[in-house]
Length: 230
View (tube, one colour):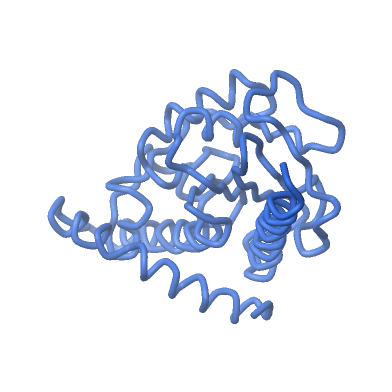
């Protein structure tokens, strides 16, 4: 690699790390995590993930690099990094993952096995949101793989008794989808408590998902400002 290529590569890696740390700070600033939770990004054959600490305190130098082919986790990696690795291996389209435990997600996971979109923005999480019926922490490759299979082609997964996982093409979009998952679960709980519900039709879901890319970016900009990082 010549000097110019090395400089470009280093600048690219630094930009990825900066975006990951910002997303972690926003996730914390939105109140979607407490002392737990993590954000990761796929980059050049490895995963960069936040360490096991409060996300608003994470700095770039603490990020943990893990090869996507790893069969052991390096020192300093969060034990649930296995869940992230399993999703990246199963879903080449996924570039970033957020992991959190919003209260509404915990509540919804206890009362249903699948969440159908009840409003347009919820369709940005998938045609439906599956619930993984296993409350164990994803602290092994096997448990991570099982969760990835439940996720399937959706962009969000509720983990019964254990919060949720959301995916994106950037760390910011993964965090945006976690905010959307929390909102979708709150709407689900409110609607089902009020009486019979009407879910979005397949055509309505498809239309909302077609509009998602630019609107997710717009919502991410809003959430950055709301969290005070923009």
